[in-house]
Length: 215
Image (cartoon, rainbow, N blue to C red; front, side, top):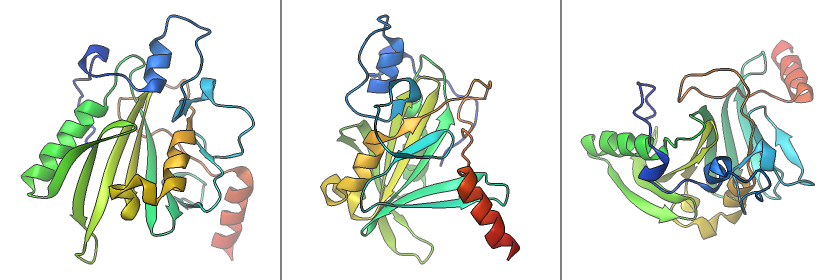
């Protein structure tokens, strides 16, 4: 669903930029941070406890469980937040500094799912245009899935909501609050567009995981 083929990119004039990307394009270096995230690390609000996973910092929200799948070396492959009967998988990817890629990615995903005759449509939410689909799970049951994309300076965040919170954000407010408080740290390494940004366990969690693997 997320191809790494050579992208055509989307110019800033093709679609309204996200708050994070608009902030990056601002010529006023003293311009205030956007009202909600995902935030670039430069504009992250102070005084908010967060779980530092490298390129993603997840705000600590009551009632939200953070589940990660990591290698023995501590490299994270998947990050899923769960609240009640809903969940959201988060991923951060490399992107151009001044060009958004979500419109292009969304078009590709929409075409692929339509070609496979899946139930999918575009919907609008507080983060712009998203994709809402009903997809089969491993057991063959249809589940509701919403793909949300946010463009930032040299990064792109994709949030994949499942369960009731995918259809009605009001049914899973804690998960959407996590997305709006998310902080993205883009390193200075040159990376191909759409390459996943590195995620890692905090040192204490990585040590705990190694001890469990060795037991």
